[in-house]
Image (cartoon, rainbow, N blue to C red; front, top):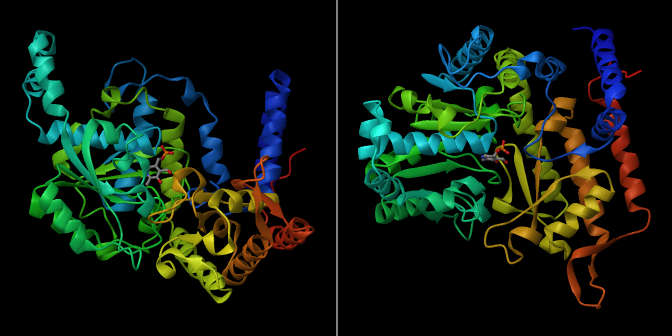
Length: 478
Ligand code: PLP
């Protein structure tokens, strides 16, 4: 696609939008300016290609298509069937998975589909027997009572939030922590690394129905063969949430025992993080779970977003190109450069480094909370997010860490030297920020004082790198 085509497509689209609600057109333009002008280091974000973005803006958005391919609750779904079939085909090829379900609207939705599929597949209830016989209307109030009792109280073991797990892995405020009787495994208090023997011991004692592996903020690779061994020993289903690192799996950086797909019974993911697709989710499964996963809509999902499924197909086609493997390797190499940049400047990293796309910086040595660090960095045009560190004394709101990721800036073309400079700029900001006080003069975990001139200095240095690696080069809005 040529630059001038993309430029005129977006310019004209914005004109159409402005004719109805100019403030939305203005915000859309401003978002591009802001994304172009900041160092995006949020580990869960990326920049999808113009082809992926354009695919989302079509009339497929107007179509209802509840159900699955060839089995819809609405008429006229022949083109949605084409889209969903292609997206699933690409996904199966890309990940070497026997089955792919591309409908989930987000990562959380994908996990909900997985949970309910596991319950449906592994928990024998009178309700399910009747469902399979298709006489759900005959269910009595007593049947429902049994269902609620038998479906409830199942056990789930997942990684704790402060060790790097996700809310949906059994954390109490999320439905996963309420619908399951849950326990959490952490990381080794000394090294910050996953201790497989400790996970196995916990699994033997707790005997979960579901063992969840995967993470949002753990800066290391996981051995999924070992996790499957643990699951098998206790009769659990291994569910891997690869939302964060799906791009590294697709790009063949994580292979063998680091690739979850052959080991997990069910693998879930988002499609918009390192995988660089549209905002959405997906479930991959071994054949034995396929029929249950296929019932995701209407079990827990609303009607599929056909325009997003179409964009998933385009993104997966992109990820099947050899250039995506080069990209994924660069994401991991850049994370190493970033980590080394911090370590040589005396900063503390959880686990002492990284071997994926995440660097988790412990900012307590700067005398700051994660919240203060995140805000000061934003003032200097560095976009990050605060994150708990293991056993965080500041809890999940203020935190003691800042999570950084390389997928987005790698898409812009940043390499080793630029990531070293990024570390230098971040250390510059944090070393020149001090904790503030509350109105009453008490120490504050939120307010901060950024040294004079620091934001300008850092913004100027970032601008040089950002100008060298423009976002959507050639896209000029008229
Ligand atoms: N799973 C993991 C591991 C995540 O990191 C995230 C998002 O941060 C999700 C699931 C949820 O994804 P979404 O925001 O698309 O629902």
